[in-house]
Length: 269
Ligand code: SF4
Image (tube, rainbow, N blue to C red):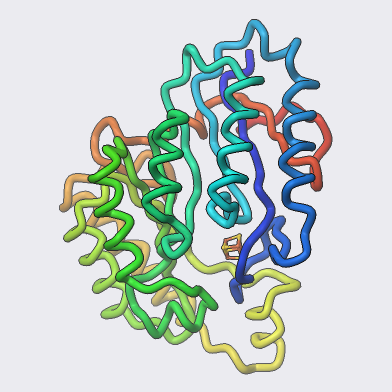
């Protein structure tokens, strides 16, 4: 029985140096057409979805928040039209901190989005630049303030470790900041340098220095210890949450809607 739906928005306003996801630079892409095609894809699933108890929807990317307010409105309207939402308990949208406005967050809440998953990666401004990210810590603080104003029930942030030249002290400082902000759900990933990324090219030319396996392992150990100390349960290898704030989406068998990369295909998600 399908219980979760994943919808992919494969557009980004900037391409990060480490990224090997299915994404396209936003400029000159047929974004409106893609959203309409997603609507057609949802309509194709109508019969399958009619009797399904959809409990989770996850909009990922790319970056869903690369869409304008009007485009997000259209996307949410299509979702509301085609996906039964009576049993929905978790509706997540991924987000980049510098693309979230109060208006976008109000729109999300209006359509029932109750969980934000934000790509923070690090609170170290220099490392953010190394990663090719465009946001700053102030953007993150602003989103947290907007989340209070719009009564967002849950926020998750992604953090990364094992970054180029990252020291243990830098990793500790990023974690401390996340704890200070009392973020209820934290996903922490070690950097994997994948082919066809800027980091991969730099590494091949000997121009990228990574911390090494031992330090990376120490960072992961420290992460697990500190999470426990700060009251987070580790419910997956990379996921930590306050009680009741675990993501339900990953536990469900779902469908993936991504017209560029995948055909109609049942996915174990
Ligand atoms: S914002 Fe996310 S999907 Fe887009 S390029 Fe950066 S890491 Fe990749």
